[in-house]
Amino acid sequence: MLIVDTLFFIFFLSFIPISWFIDATALGLSSWPPTVTKELVAWWVRLCDPLLGNPPLWFRAMTWFEVTIYPFFCTACCVAIYRGLGKSRWIRIPAVVFASIIGYSFLFVISEYVFGRYKNPAPWIFTSAYLPYFVIPILFAYRTYHPAKSVAGGKKRLSRESKTSSTEIVKTRQTKRRSSGTLSTSQSVQEENVIASIDEPRRLRSRDALKKPSRT
Image (spheres, rainbow, N blue to C red):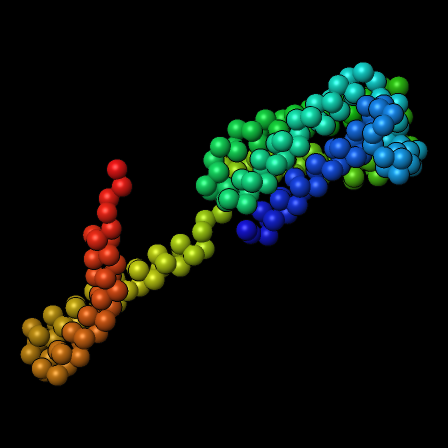
């Protein structure tokens, strides 16, 4: 995986425990999450997120959706990234849907703090903490439609092209020198050996491909 895909992988993997242990406190369950997590969330609520401490009905509905649906999607994203986004085109539409859901959820929360009855005591801290959860899904959705090309494949293609061009150059030189009468027998043999050494791996690959049984 490339570095950017590794970062996406870490983001979606970390999203699962955050949903289950942090955001689940908005559901008001007595047995979940653990007490230590509730104390940490209580500190965060006092710092910059009062909506999480006293959530309205619409916020609880979004939290239920997040706790039950998001982990499955995040797992699918991790699988797609591990397999390679170029091979996992099935993740494209779910990625766009997920980015859209995250986007309007974030806008709902921001609108509540700006126009609603909840006043955020530290809006810059809140925005800095939650903005990545708004931006990264959008970037990932874009990434699924523009996956990185294989570096190994590019190297193999360049190698084949360089070998082909080398063969053509040697043959062209031979033709010109034969027509001008400046090509000796020993030089011709040497250049034929060069061409053979370049073409031999290609012939072997072609022969192996013909030997492989066709799949039906």
